[in-house]
Length: 388
Ligand SMILES: Cc1ncc(COP(=O)(O)O)c(C=O)c1O
Image: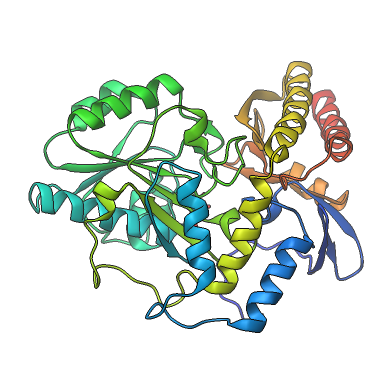
């Protein structure tokens, strides 16, 4: 293999996708409860996405950000019209979106206060990306080791601890970044009261609240973006993963009062806002925002939740069920790696994070009868492990 040894890859060569299934080189089908790590919101082979990509690729693949092109403008309008934000910057990934958000927060704070007001607070168990600044913001030591020195200006607060947060909010702090539900950290939900209190404290001190919705956004938790189900408006929000419908695309968004801090020359990206990726993104968002789409998804998600809760009640091997919408997890009392391996053998794709949390991130198009297949598998595996 000529690839660098950075991923623990399973020995399957995926060659095709169809509806909610991936297909390997031997023609074996895998029902997908991971969707390319929360990337393929409409499953595989969606005609609207395919046609949007083909049409845009035929017209223009790339022109550079020296010029306007139609699809990034259309996508930005869709985002602005359906969120509380006024301006959008397109990147290529979630980490890049968060990098941009950090730069925006620091520039806003420097212009309004002083250059020393530059500290960004993040939370234990968070995940914000793999670039140096975003891995520093990531509140898990295991991501930091080997990569010192890390950039300065980041501090960590215990996830959900409002008292600890309050003591940290001094006049050096310019922003707080939080995932409303921690994905890589193990499907940990930030309590609504904590978020409301955090917003109040941040507003009092003019500290910017950044929601990292790279994983929770684009319908995943039942709302277009998770913040819309909580009832607070962040000052800056980042998105990626499902935003491009499978093509690399990220974004950070902000209200005018914050966004206007950035001027030409402050930030940029050669590929950011690529017209083909944005055409795919438009197709995704138009579909998700069609009347009834999210209602239908939420009904299926509720069914999934009820079935997982039944398993959690039945087997003591399960410590806890957690999740919202189609971002669901089962924390086990044992390691989850074997479940993942067995699932692949059975033609099911699931995932395990933080050693013991089985994470389910299916396409938003998953069907009840497909959920039944997974539940039957999990029931069998849990039974085996409970008897042993
Ligand atoms: C919440 C969150 N932020 C940021 C990232 C980084 O995104 P990317 O891998 O596109 O850089 C991820 C990726 O898993 C994520 O889950």
